[in-house]
Length: 309
Image (spheres, rainbow, N blue to C red):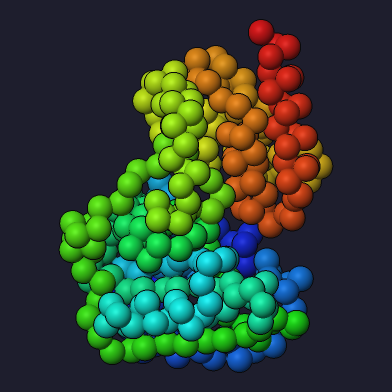
């Protein structure tokens, strides 16, 4: 299988290596022993389970496929509970703590290995199916096949843990999708909760509002509208200029372009859509941005676009 390693969050090309499961476990277990400061995590080595064609940058649209899947747990499970659930699958796995893991609140990553390569769309469906099967909240951003994962480390001030199993049957992709069909959400919150963990997700008014917006947007799924690489409302040139431009206002300028593009094409977007785009953009450029900043830029961009018409 192919794993791609990146020198930091700003590295868009990375280096691909053909590895087997014991290799991956050895590489990550050695990394987990290295002492690191959480403030430096954006400059740490990054891991992707995805392979890309030679010469193309890391992007969902460029992904060839993946033979492993990463899922982040920020609440609802301890590492012991997660390992017990994964052991029932009798499959190889890696579970390791992330930078904000504490004794009181475990935050960690689960990596599972698949029996065949999956495409970007299949990756998301497998992610949703496994989330539904496990029945705990997962970080919804990890459903993206192009998402980077920070390599495990002995993070200063954190509760650090690393567990793995080399033996077992690989996750049968088709069986998972057949026996545990994933519900396709109308809107994806920051943390995707399976139906068993959040009744509020199925609030009828929220569903009707989301359905109305979906119809107004020509049937486009909200997640597609806010995907930096494939969204019809993110102008490629504006994104390229924002990624390569000088710091200072580039998030706001990108959101203005997105808001104008949406209005000119008749898409019904709101502040939440722009916040999702801004959050992913901030991650891409390695910038830590507060929710209040994202909300401020999104609101101002929508107001600016409204005044241009």
